[in-house]
Length: 400
Image 1 (tube, rainbow, N blue to C red):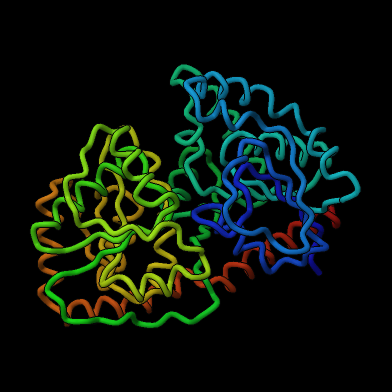
Image 2 (spheres, rainbow, N blue to C red; image 1 turned 45 degrees about the vertical axis):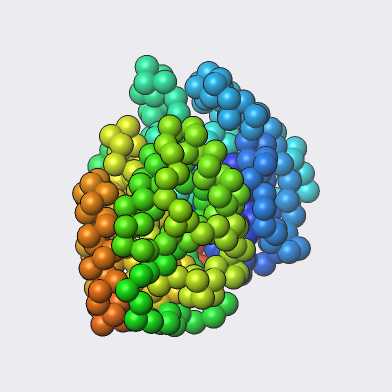
């Protein structure tokens, strides 16, 4: 029996990219009549893909999305950290007529504090999903972050189950907050089984980057990668929302010039077609994580969700990331599927790609290993674990 589940989230549940797509896939097997999704207004403007059919969607005021994209983001963050725990009644009004037995929230932005308060007042079990390190994502000023961190620690301890996106995040939070969690890796598209991608024998590779629009240091790294591999005749294929226009805007923002003419723009590719598109248009796939020290925590504990669909594409995976990152840890643990470049030097990226292009046998072995590694991201076992824990907590609550 599936307990009635209320999901409170500032991350919209849509079939798009990153956290939105992960929620869409995870919740896609839950009975629609037992599910209510309460989305915060901070997520407005994120929607590109479809919603879960037949599921009731409501919204509550979790702050202005426009302010979140303005210079007032830190001021707004302080305000929301203080007031959102007092907005549990706003959730109750939004989902009127639905009587939840379990509350599931996503610890991103500040709606999770309202969800925790709602669950506490009603005496309901709370489950927390963590796709990003909350404190790093919140963009609070340093002098206030200590206070906000303590509040978040209490929320984390309150939860009946805590679902962390990476082993590194679970380990870090267990040490910091004194309670353990479970690892819930990203899940891949299950519409078709993983297959090895076509491994041709070119000496010039097309390397694809898919997912969200790269920002900040990650975007700068991506442009440096394109320039570094141009000398070998290799190309970078972009499959991101906004395509080249978004990349040009990013280059202007970070003060970079797009000097390489080897970038192909395929624009946004819907999630149900991304694996096929990667196989059709690429020889290898790229994960790029910034080396900037200011992003240490988010890079160390978050996990690139693109690895789920990358591995299903059955192509060699190139990870250009700091040695302390979750992406680098995955590459070391799956070294037969991934080539790790843990130096910031673009010359290291160029040498790695040239070496990969020169050896088709290595690419074939990496492709086979990537397909095998995709089992880590299987959707149905992840759903079974999540749904089973939700049911267990509901039974435990009824029995108490």
